[in-house]
Image (cartoon, rainbow over all chains, first blue to last red; front, side, top):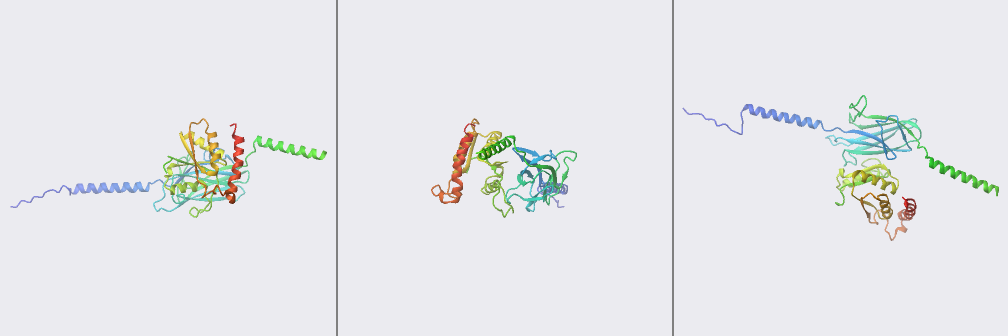
Length: 196
Length: 146
């Protein structure tokens, strides 16, 4: 009788080990796709107004008064551009009571070549002493903001509106004194001329 | 190339011409950033000081604050040739006692600014040279005892 000898192929493995390898591969694929879908979404944060070398956090100071007539704001943009590589848009809407809203849009990545993270500066002109709102939204991205504090801390939302007041800067005492002194000098000169 | 580890840009809050890519008028600091990135400077090596500056003096004050908070040992300022005398004088005045070694590098005139020999036949020359002398005098008087 001819003896059948089957030499196990060390490279092939038996059915159980093949199944194990397939399961591992499946797990790796799941993990990979999970990592892919968990890529940091585009978000904005840290919205501040620049006021004489001081940065006023608009979230932490609702209702605060910001002095114009030109106000500069900063917003941090973080996250990754979606895999389709499409340009994203950051939209800023500044609305002052009784005035038409100012809308500004900024592309992400900036100039098509500067991806996040980066800080975007924008400026708006105000006209007086009014209540104002600033709405920030990354168009087509939802959510795009994580509420940084308060009762809704950590909640993810699509766009956020900050409320504050805008006012004209109060003249410094020194400026007022100078102006007053100038006016007094002018009045005296006029008086002298009349009396001559 | 290779002169500094970091590049610091200040913000004069002024905007440049229309950008077709951005479809808006970008700030000059943004144009500078984009140009640097285009030239191969890594984005994370460019620092921007956003606090608006409106004069050489306020700009240098912002630089001193940046230098102190980042522990800089040396600083090389790049500016136009016409501005370099006042910039250098202000820089030394504001950084007095800081221990930071300073340098200045001016961009040669001729491309963005008029040639020194013929500045007087260009409008840009009249915008640059006479006001610069006035500003030097003003800075010398106002900062002399600082």
